[in-house]
Image: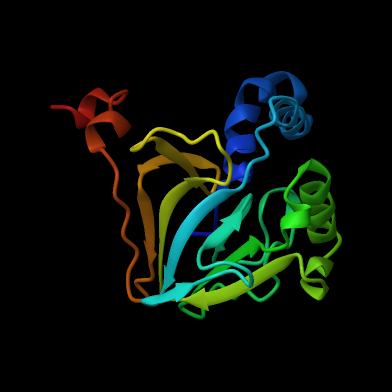
Length: 198
């Protein structure tokens, strides 16, 4: 069951925090955030988004331009933040949220928005975030909102409940209310267990 997943900068920060976790604990995320800021990597991603077959757009353009995307099934994400206070785990819907305001897509804007999420989700009362719900979500990666574009077919990072997953071009979430389905490579997952490889 999906609890939360993120794309764009939160996924990058989670990935970059891994080497610092053994020595720095929760501070590893702060270190990773500062490292990404120093590398000038706070650049919004562009996505063409469909939710239940309908195109989702921002208020000012015909695609979504954001530095932070979350697809959740519950209110809480890492660190006890309430990213989407409208989420309900047993309603059979995915909850999709993103930062809409282009003025908050830098380091200070993201820190401010996530600080509000830590304070009980009060970011829902301003225009920074937008929220949608549905059963099927598809995100097509269009590139970065910058002159420096990643090469076509570049793998993008998606973090699901703390685990990294990589995708090319698009990712898709679907709700299966009557069942749970996991897809994984059994050979690599069970490689350390000799009893599973016979």
